[in-house]
Amino acid sequence: MHKQNFKIILSFLLILVSNFFFSQKKFTIVLDAGHGGSDHGANRTYSDIGRVAEKDITLAITLKVGAMLEKNRDFKVIYTRKIDEYPSLSDRTNLANRSKADLFVSIHCNSAQRSTAYGTETYVQGPNQNNENLEVAKRENDVIFLDEKDRQTFGSYNPDSPESLIALKLQQSKYLESSLLLGGLVEDNFVNKDKRFSRGVFQKNLHVLRMNAMPSVLIETGFINHAEESHYIASEKGQNEIAESIYNAIIDYKKAVDRKSGGSFTTKKPEPEKPAEVALKNDFRILLMSSPNKYNENDPALKGLNYVLTIKENGQYKYYYAVTNMASVRDINLKTAKDAGFRNAFAVGFMPNQKISMGYYTIEVYSGDKLNGNSYIIQNLKDVERNKDNGVFYYTYGKVYTLEDAAKLQKELEAKGVKNTVIQKVYK
Ligand SMILES: [Zn+2]
Image (tube, rainbow, N blue to C red; front, side, top):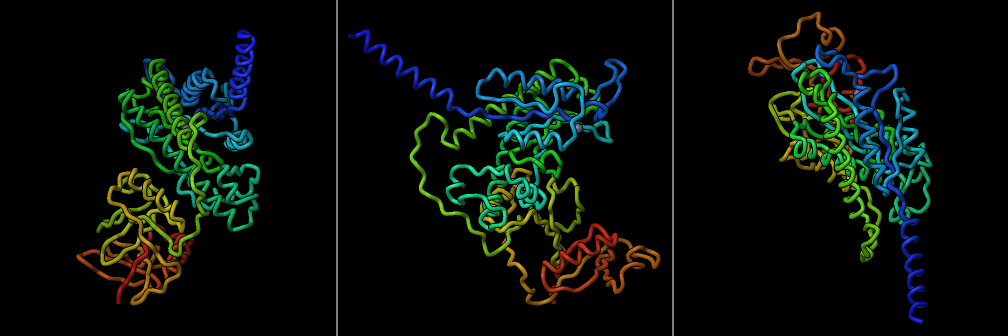
């Protein structure tokens, strides 16, 4: 009798346990060893260790990370390459999208013209309102995975409905948030565990990041042309440390994601139904800083942020990052700016297509020494205005009354070959 009960309980427990194991969806991660085959990536030859090629180092580190992950039954690991071959960038992203992967990690080595540059850095895709990214997501119908909550809110997916577009934007802002989380964990481990120098987490418009429908990071593990660092990343010890740091970051990332989604074990009270996010009336940009100095795209002063709009006002250049009309995206953009080092950044509302109440917008096409009659600007633009202030000559072009028209004018100038211009607000 007693034995019989025990048997029943035991088989019941077995069913429970096996149900539990089979119902666990594995976390699919795509590991991408950069370059390969005829594409060597960065490389340099040293007298003591010979030729150091990026494609070999990325493969060695990737295989080490993969081997550690494969020991963990929660993970399914997919490699874009396991040997010295070259899958195209599209092959890599298609594989990731087709596998409906949860995470994409691309491993690379850096190089710079200056052989003094060193350290690690991690890239994530730029702000999620990147149109191309959105177009990819729209086109690739079957790579849209709304999570359970979003699916309840938005129902079936129709790429042309405005609700689906909002869902897409929300989904992309979640990817960016997740990618930033993983990037931060990776760089933290490089600094804290491996005592290396981190250059930070940056946004960049890269194919392997842009074409992926999942959180994605690209890790630059060190500089090939920095003598000391290349010896480290080419060594067994260095590669083991780097692989372990990436592995541990992925483990911590998955824990954080599980915690956020309620996890497999915890019984959480159901959250109150949140209404779908509606677009705000205003566009929001993140004001990074005001400065009397003009910085062009890719200036280190902008700390790696792209999509920066500069507006000159009362002699000050104001640098605004990204634009969105979604509150959730605005908050993420603000966090991105602060993480990049703009501690005092804040969001500023812009009413779309608002006519300026007094004065106008113009485009500052040049500042510096006086231009002579043969200069490209004087030759190609009619009616350029010239002003002199504190010994500096400022040249402006055009007169429009909304920020949108000013941006359009700026684009037209760029097409004509007049680059690095600034929108200027003139009060009259
Ligand atoms: Zn590379």
